[in-house]
Structure formats: structure tokens, C-alpha cells
Image (cartoon, one colour):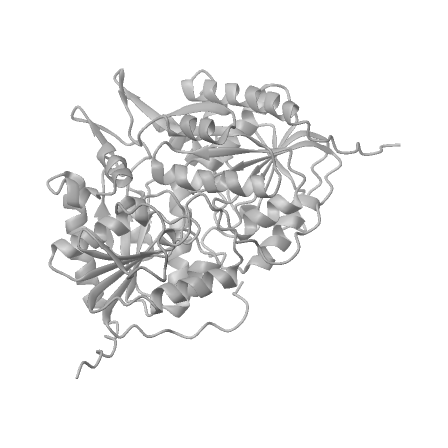
Length: 272
Length: 272
């Protein structure tokens, strides 16, 4: 089964060195949490970082980064900036209650506009929080955006891994390097006892089977949901927590893996 | 913002008394787990039940109901049956590794075929596991299928509730009664201590705000993921567990709420 029609043309993002997609076959595995905390961890390593929330149906970046309400595009200087990260999201333009019951071509139009019409400036990394799944929006984005690579987020249980495998397959079909797999909600520590609430180890096993790097696991911590809802991701709020350390390690591995892919650096912007 | 074009025509399902959609604005909240266990709980109450997995991009029903592999549609009598439930899923036709990177109109075509060409027989309830979100597939389904009502699944944290609210809004726009809201992964009990891993109480609050019934909460239990991966949902495997009891209570409330909506009963099939 192949998508219908010719793939759209790649857009050019000359001021951005690396574009990293954070993807998942399945929603609710913590993709937006990983994308937000990865962006903050790359920033903590001294990089200039942007975060594009491409989950047009369910944008989570605004609440996770602490930005409430919508903004008049005529009167607002996008991208917004919070915790040192440049931000763009459909959630800044549309009220959360409004069901985004849009057909595919409209989604593509808005995503392309958010990417190309936002004055990102010079960035080392643009992290894109992709919508979950392997449908229209994902396919169009992976074909349109000059992606350096993709990070795939999964939770440990089989029902999640099956969908992660489909995500892997989609990136391979469109020739985007898979930087590796992150296992989120890997285990829960309570009073020193370890609970594998959603099972354990599936992410590593999938990475081995698929021949891609295993980028690490992130434990469950009730502070992750609290921080996400409060608009200050855990990497920023609790940098000494095990979860934050997992994300700093993830950022380092992602930076290394991107260098390995040999993705062609985009042409530098001329600034005469 | 309104969908483009005229809504598709409603299909007729004369042998099915009630069609219940299980939906979520966001993926990964346990929608398929709720759909499967709700189907089993309705069956435990003595009803004739079918389960249609309409999550065409990420079908989870096959693994959750214990059916492996794909089937030749020419040589197979659909619907399949497991644990007393009649089942249909895209996962029976397409290998899980195959990324379903389809455009919207193909999705609609396949979903309609699965609904109308499957010989369901006489059913009291057809539970439909909708794809998460409020995109093309959901919109088309809610416009095409004669739904008696929708159950909305959420987890407690704000980022999930925002998407649940969008789901509510979508059903209202297409005049499908919302039977109520279920809060899944509500809390975790370990050694008698209660951990609110993903926060707590948001489902009830959302139901109150939206003026729809709160259908109950379902605790976290590591056996849910184990059972899901093993193909025997917890209602069937551990009927005495707190989680199973939550689902039996949910099934009773859903049956009551459907009667309240006064959804017109479909014409009975003539069998002369």
C-alpha cells in the first residue's frame, strides 16, 4: 500500500542546522513530554533550540511550556519564547475547546506555514513534536521537512510497540534516519520498590530487532504530569531528578547520533 | 472552522440495536482497553456484543483479544469471535509492521466496508473503538454510523483533558449524545498506599463542566497491560479485581444512559 499522488517538495530551512522529529506510532506515550524535555535538555547543553508543535489536532506544547490562551497572529511576534526555547504551536492560534475537525490538505497547509513563516532565526536544533500515528499529517511532514532524523517514543507494552514499529517503517519508507528509540514510562519506584506498571524492556527489544540505537529509558514520576500541567517541564523544574538526568543523557545521545547520520547540513544563510 | 463538503449519508445497521463509540481526544489513554473490557462487561451482563476496531492506523483490538496474524478475507468467516465477542479489525487484514500511510478517503472506504460488509448478526451492542483524536476518520465515522452515543475516555492530567474536551465538542457538532466520561489510570495502589501518577479527578471535573454524566474511574493495575498483551482482557481474566468491577459498573451505567438518550431503535430486520 502506498500513499496516493506524488510526494510534496522539500522546503528549505536555511537558518536551522538540524531538524529532529519526535514521533510515536501511538498517542499518549509521552511524545510531547519527551519533545519538550529533549528541547530543554539540548538547551541545557548550550544549544540554540526551537520547538514546533506539529500535533495540530492535539497540541500539548502550549500547556507543557506554560503558555496559556491564544494570540492574534497580526499583533504577536512568533515564535514565542519560554525557558530559553523558541516555540510555535497551533495551540497559540486556536482555542483548545475548538475541535480541529479538519481534512488533510488544510492540515498540510497550516503545518507548512508554521514551519516556513515563523522567523526562527539561527537554531542548532528544531525539535518537531509530530502528531502520533502514521497518517496524512505525519506522511506529509516527513516528506516536506528536511529532517535530520527521528526519535521514536514508545511505552513498554506490546500494544504500544506494534505501533512504534509502524512509525519506524514509515520513516524508512521516506528515507528519514531513525536516531533511535526511547522507552518512556519504563518503571515506577515507590518506597524503594520497583513497579513495572506498563511492563518493561520492550523499547530495547524493538531497537535491537530493528537495528536502530536504543536511546534509553525514562522512569515514571508523578512530578512529570504535575510539571507538564504546570507549564515547567521536569528538566527545568527538577534538574536533579532521575527523569531529568535521563533527558540530559538522551540529548547527548541524540546529538551524537545526528552527527553519525551524515545528514547534509543545509546551506548557511548569507548575512552580508 | 467547519469540515469541507457535505456530510456523508448515514448507513443502516438493521440487526444491531445500539452502537456505542468509545472515543478519546488523545491516544494512549486506554481507549482500546476500555472498549475491549466494556464489550466483555456488557457480555457478562448477558448481552450480545460485537466490537469493531475502527483504529485503522493503530488497531489494538487483535492483540488485546488474543488474535494473532492476518487472515485471507476470501477464506475467513468474519466477524471472528473471542471470549464471546464478535470482532472485526483492520489488524485482521494487514500486518502490524505495515505502516498504514493512507490518505483520508481510503480510510473512510475501508471503515464503511468493515461496518456494512461484516455479517454481525443480531447484536444488542456494537462497541466501536474509534481512532483517537478529532480528525478525518473520526469525523467521517460519527457522520456515517448511526451512533446511539459515545463514551469518552480520558486520563486525569490537563494535557489529556484538553483533548477530551475537543472530543466532546466534536460529538456535539455532529449531534451524537455523549453518554459520559470515564477517567482511566485514575490512581495506583501499591502496598496499600495510593499514588496519583497522572494526577486525579480531572475526568469528573470535565464531566461537570460539560454537563455530561461522569461514568466512573478505573484504577491503574499492572495486570491491565499484562492482560492486554496476553489477549485476555482483565474483565475476563480477573473478574474479581477492582478494575474488572469498575468495568462491570461502567457497562451498567452505559446501558442506563443509552436508554435515557432516547436514540431511535433501528428498524428490525425481517426474517420471514
